[in-house]
Image 1 (cartoon, one colour):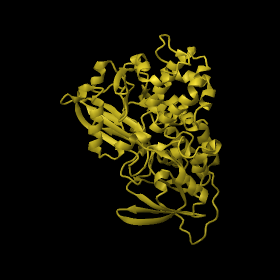
Image 2 (cartoon, one colour):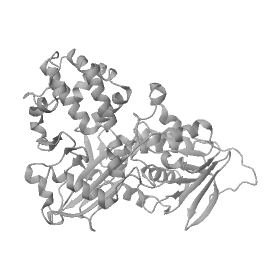
Image 3 (tube, helix red, strand yellow):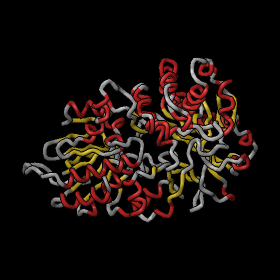
Image 4 (tube, one colour):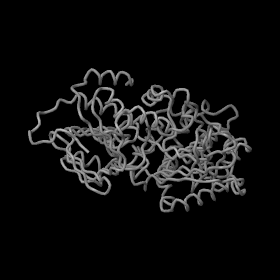
Length: 499
């Protein structure tokens, strides 16, 4: 639904001013505070950590507007994510939108296939050597086998290991036979070396129907991640956070770690730690944007069994990112101007900046982006160990990284171990997929309010892992809050949420 239409509906439904406590100062909490204040409501915003922005985390190496930076969290906006773009434009950042060059767009980028390094543009010439299992299936057309090899390459580049294994099983048992039934010629480039994956999936929905449920769902994510319609914010994604913070009147209270929530009929009792002391207050309304991976470990009362099950069973995917501040953009000397290389086991994806930086201050390489089970070996490392490990593996593709003075600094985060998220994002392909219809509607149960307690965040949306999902769920929660008809409260109840 159009953002302005949702906001118009909120204005129409708006009741008398309310007092709302928002838990969490990520993008969902900040958008809620911004819009609720504009509607005339009194807002209090509590954040458990000392940092504002949630999983939007731009790390800067140094100070000043031209300081080199890298994204430890959100880094992309799809051109169809109109809720996100609405706030980019409303907050005066439209001129900072620019193209994000993604995986497979830069043909000079590299691929690691079984320890051998190739340019993406040259990789298909070696498929027969490295994917012998596919090419030995001579009962299928050569075109079919070549196409299957490209599909394997695309999925290996993006999918976590369990889904890569699922694809290999499906391919061997029946998918390659399904491909052989189809006319694949229209999806090859003129030179026959690359394929148009997007057009193939769009034209052949039956192919996804023959995949495992988890893989079929993930193919949708691959379509987005390999899209040439991705955008980024010049200067860092946290510019959006900074503009929201500036526009919000209420001060954001950090270092308020929530420990208990009691959803009562006419109030919400919230307890948090403040300077080491427990604070407990009755709040008129509460919007909780705390990830369910954290919420499930709090003391929760007044929650029905369905809600508790939703909180417990929401599946989060671990993710790690490691960025390296380099004294020079050495990859440009290799003809790489953005996009991503496929580092294989260990570091998975390497993303190159596609925004020009001040050459005197160096450039930042996203040296490793891993998700799912591929993060397990990285998660157990300390930050210095992880940075050293990633640097060592990147050097196998880019020996120049070992030149003294090339690496200036590094930063890393393991979102699965991060105290305030315990995960990178929710995933629609995880957990029990036996009931596909109910699985698709899980986010509705996650977003369902309990009396005066409301919920928002990417885990409550149709767009997990994206800012779009966090914002959409926040707008829906705003509408629920402003249109809520309060029940007359007992005289003994505390009327306001005070700190």
